[in-house]
Every structure is written in C-alpha cells, then in structure tokens.
Image 1 (tube, rainbow, N blue to C red):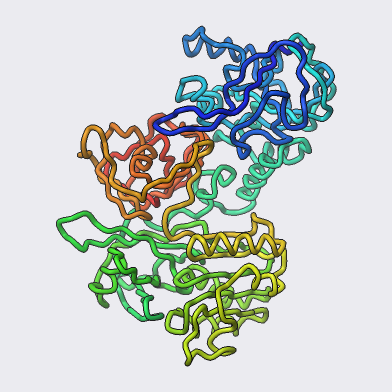
Image 2: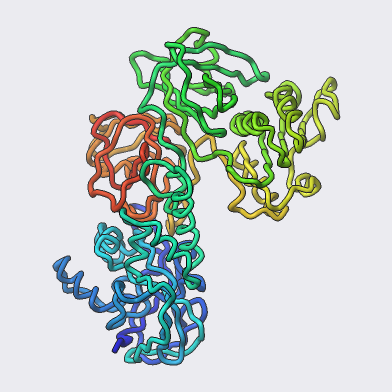
Length: 590
C-alpha cells in the first residue's frame, strides 16, 4: 500500500548562487495537518519559474522514500529531510519504474493524474548541494514525477494513496524519461508516448519532434526534442577551409556582397535557405584573428556562396572586408550552419526584414522562386530610403516568378527622387498597425530578420494577426537571447575579456564568433559555459550537467572534451558547453 509520508510546501525566495541570485521555490518544508490542494499548487506553495515548473500539468511534484534511501547510500549522506528533492509529496511506494503516465490516484479528498517526469534543472543541484544531481536523477532512472489535480481536496501526511486507474500504454515514468533524455530510444516508444492523452503538452511537443526526426533524414545524433540546435544538418566540412573571392558588388550605400568559390573550381556543397557561414580574417598577422558570421544571401543551389555585409562604423570584420579584401583574395570560411531555415510544408510564407536583415530571407526567396512555389509569399522590407535599400531589383525579379508573390516596402525617410509605388509602397517604418492591414493568413510561417527591437515588434504584431508563436522564426546577427532560468536579471555589461583571479589563461584559444572575443583557456574556468559567463556573453542553460541540451552550441572549428560525459551526445558539429573543455583551439557560435 502506498502512503503519503509528508506534504511539503515553500514559497519562492532569492538565493545567492555562483555570484548571482536565483529566484526559486525548490526549498520545501513539511507541514502538519491537512492542506488544500488546488489546480495549480498546494496552499502555501509556489514556483519560482513557471516556464519549467508549475501550471496545471505540474501542480504537484512527487518523490519516493525508496529513492531517498538509494541516494543516501549512493552519495554517502545522512542529512536528508522531507522535501529534500524539492518535492511536494514525499511518498512510500509509487516507484518511477512502476508508475505510468496517465495513472490516476486518490489521496485524501483529492484526485490526481500522472502527467510527466520531473524536468531536471540546476535548482535540484542547488538544493542538494550536489552539482551532479540533475544528471544523476536521469542516469539512474529516478527523476520523480508531476501530478495534475483532477479534483481539488485536502490531503495530509498519513493518507493512503489509492490507485484508481492505469494510464493507457502503461508507459512508466522512468521509461518515458529515458526516451527523451537517453540514447537507445525506439520509434515504437515514441509512438506509444504520443498515444497517451494525459501526457503534458510540453512532453507531447518533444515526442512529436522525435517522431518528426524518424519521418525525415534528420542529422547525425542529437535530438530536436531537446533543442532546435540539433535541427541543422551536419556541417559539410570541419573547421575552416580556404575559399577565393570571385566577385564583389555594392548592394546599397553601406552593404556590399562578396562571392566565394572553391579554389579548385569544384562546386561548393549546397546550403539551406537561411543559413550562414563564419569567416576567419587576419587583419593583424601577429594578433588574434577576427571571426564573424554572415548570412548567405544568394541562391541556395549555387555552386558558390554569397554573403552581404553592412559596413559598421567601427566594425573590425566589416571594415577589413570592405577596405582590404579584393577579388582573388583567399579567406578562411566555415561550412554553412544554422536552424533559421525555410520550413518544408504547404503553409503560406511571410518574409520580413529591415536593412541588412534581408540577407537570409532573400536566400529563402530564391529557393521559393526556383521552385515556382504556388503558395502566397509576402516580401515585407523596411529601409531608410532608396540608397539604403539592398536587393531591390533582385527581390522584385524573384517575386515576379511567384504566382502568389506580394510585396510591401516601407521607406522611413524617402528622398525626393524615390518613387512611391515603384521604389517603395508606404512611408514610415514597418509597424504592427501596418501588418494588421495586410491580411496575412494566420496559418503562415513567418521569418523575421533585423535589429532585435524590430524583430520583437514584428513578432508581437504577427501574434496579433493570429499567427501561432511556434510559426514565427527569427534570426539574430549578434548574441543569442540568453536562457538562464530563475536567475534574477541584472544590468549585464557588453561581452568582455574575463577577469580571471589566476590571471589570463595560457591554454587553447576560445573564439566566440558572434561576439568577436578570443580568450585563452584556463582550466580554472571549469567549463566553456563558465568561461562564456565570465565574459558576460549571453548563454543558454538549464541543467548544467549534460542532460537537457539547452546549452547545445555549434562548434565552428575544433572539438571538446567532456567532463562529466553527457547523458546523450549532441548533434554532430555541436557541443554541450555546460560540461566540456577545449583540448585545442576552438571557435564557438556564441
């Protein structure tokens, strides 16, 4: 007979952690007497980060006394108290390898349904004072699980836990946890998981991503169920290779295009529409290289690559390209990468850009025109005036080949000789109000590239037009948007060289392609993630132990060593920076 041993609650609080502050509700304390269980939590309880915890499908977290005993022995500890693992219900019975998704249980006056395993994150490591804990929970098949409250009611320690029904497919918590996080999963397991009505929406989305991988060629290794970074095909070649500049052309007053070809005249591997390449330059032969990433703006099926670069006033990379690179010069270029690519489906397409942001979506427009795509295709572009309007004639020519091609160009400050109706459609910026007047179909896939504020505005506008946020794709030229769950935001300085207490490192060079930093490695940093954090480079992470793959990052050149080894390897050409170190020079897409 299963029994509720303790009811544990706790409100979120700010906790010092790694020189920062994290807002977390992982500290739970047992309470005496009955407590009312509501649809979202237990009276007196709260969650600090609703993106990863809480909500109707994660109202109550359960952990088992058998796992307490297991970890006490494994970790050689005897200091555990109820709520030690951040759980609301400490129970005797209900092991993860027997409880199934969709099982229903009555406890006291309340009725519950099992919806998903616990998603491991760094906060359980913080609570346990054991950095390995997120990985250990998954590796040892003891994650715990969440309950949905089907009928509210009072519960208390000592209540019997009565099983009411078994979930369809009889898929255990431990099994489905392994399907998502560990290698060796099968298509049959994924299909079973998708047939469970009680499975939480987030896990259904992850399982559907795994199924989509089985239905397509996919890429070598990795899991798009854990990260979009695994969705790009493997790079066509490792590291950098020399390519020759065959053509240079102005596209506007500030934007120039550079065309690269193989030195031996062979065809370059095809790129996907929307991808980018990384270029390594040596302005100072005695100094550190300058590494920059640029979107491909040409036809994806061409045997050569075209990038289009805006000359920034103080840009080291753009300045070098514009002032010093000539036809027949040779540059080091990495293979095309990126997940900002055109979806292969039947939905209408909306391409939105501002300034040099036109580059990746222009490549998509080439692809659509080459295929004589019959879907509705919108080309929406914002520029200052005709002198700052790149690819104007090229875009119009491509749209003329599309039966459903539609164009709207907004000039914020048109010149006297800019022709309304010919050169541009409207005066002013692309605004949410303007988008609402265009009649964009709510089932369209939208692709946006431009300044961050512009992309945010356009994203909100498209949602206002009825588009699902999952159908809206954005590409950022600079640093990625940080994911640091629960960390209290502060004013972060611009990326910089680290102030390492032991002085500058003397090891391998770590190049951060998106931020332009080249930093000598020192083992004192621990991991590449910690080095990036020391540089105030925006990063993404959750577990910090090689489980969740939130930190998965493209390796432009070089390789990593892992310590500890991740639960499952990332996609080919990527690395999990939360648990890796560079044995030699490396360039990361960060």
